[in-house]
Image (cartoon, rainbow, N blue to C red):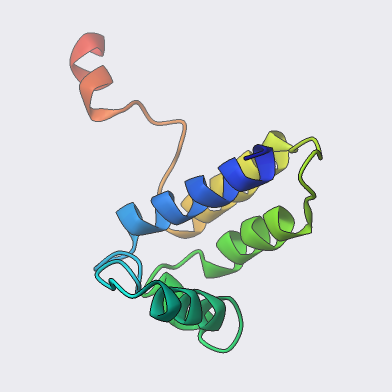
Length: 107
């Protein structure tokens, strides 16, 4: 696996943790069915993969960027981070806020 594959795996992990109910193929056992649903989610069922998330446009831009990469390409992590930050703002979050476990350390 190369950096492109790592980024795509990370993207799916992030969606599994943030989309209510997780990935649409999460509970499927048949690998052919999983592949079919993954392909549909990347084309005709795009909206269903991101559920009710408010930052869909930014997340699609991340995935579109990852898709354009080739195996040995350098990943522009700053670009991905920028898109995630924009998505956080649209969703009402602020990635510069301290984590829950950091707040106690500030008190």
